[in-house]
Length: 50
Image (cartoon, rainbow, N blue to C red; front, side):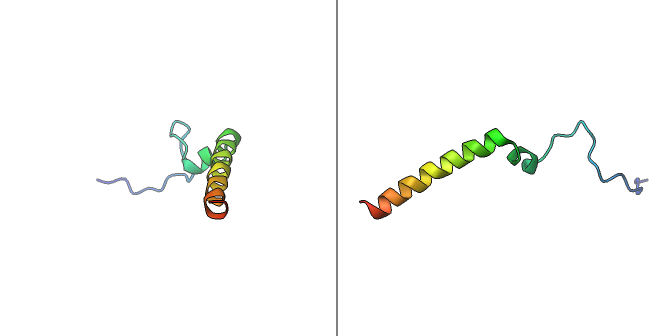
C-alpha cells in the first residue's frame, strides 16, 4: 500500500538546498553584479558610441 501520511514541511538536512539559497550567497551575487555591469557597459558603448 502507498504511504498517504503527510510529512513535515521542512526538508531533511541531508537534501541539497535549492537555487534561491545559492543566489542568496554574497560572493555569487557580487560575481553576477560584476558580469551584469560589464554587459551593460558593453551594450551602452555599442548603442551610444559606435
